[in-house]
Length: 67
Length: 245
Image (tube, rainbow over all chains, first blue to last red; front, side, top):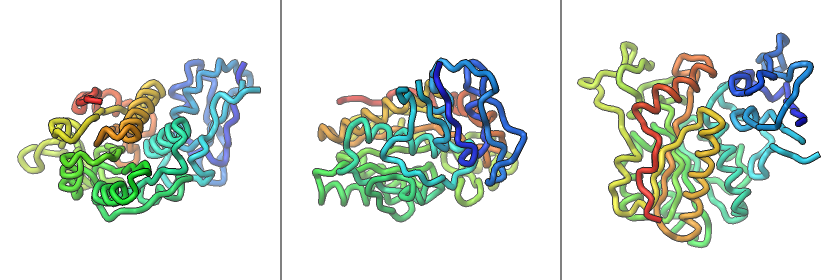
């Protein structure tokens, strides 16, 4: 299983990763970050195959993936 | 653990000033990935445009200079001719390349300058407030076409790749899009080829990247990428217009 790290302070909350995650394992947070955006995060129990779609579409380089 | 995806070396840590969901961030990163793959960072010179990407030099970790509005191909010509061992690329938006810089791009292409141009087409002037650009679609609403673009009043959308592909100096012209991960991977391939053409000394290459501008399309970032994939690609078909490499 791949490990996804999302930087909540860098995230602008555009939600493109949510749109393209084939498993629907990314969700928008309900709390604001310092920027005033609602950052995204992984769901509590996620099972990532490491397709990297989220990181490829992210315009702000908030996501790193390890496997 | 192995890294599957991490920041390319050629991009800086600095956060961009772009709006949420803007395609510029994606195109910046894709260029940096290609630069790292080809190992050309130390001999690369980029030229930033006027437009939203005007401070791209703050985000790229290689040499970048700035050109007056639309004059990227002219500055690139000068740099490439005086330093022929460097890799020179221009980064331009649709207002920069398709409006004020039309003369420069056509003549640089027609001279067959050995440079690479990355053309980001998001159909509006983002930096100045979402005014109509030459590439705005018919019926598309912008700040200066509140009732939608009309052909009689504003003319037709300008198709840059089609226009340049007929010039004998152009060796490679392709249109790609940055609206989905699959298409971003195709865009990376096209940009890589455009840089390789220059390394081989083949001549002028241009890659047009259709990109979302959620703020001035008046859509959410998610709807904006869908609009690029469904509507924009109808008017601007994705294909290789010329490849004589």
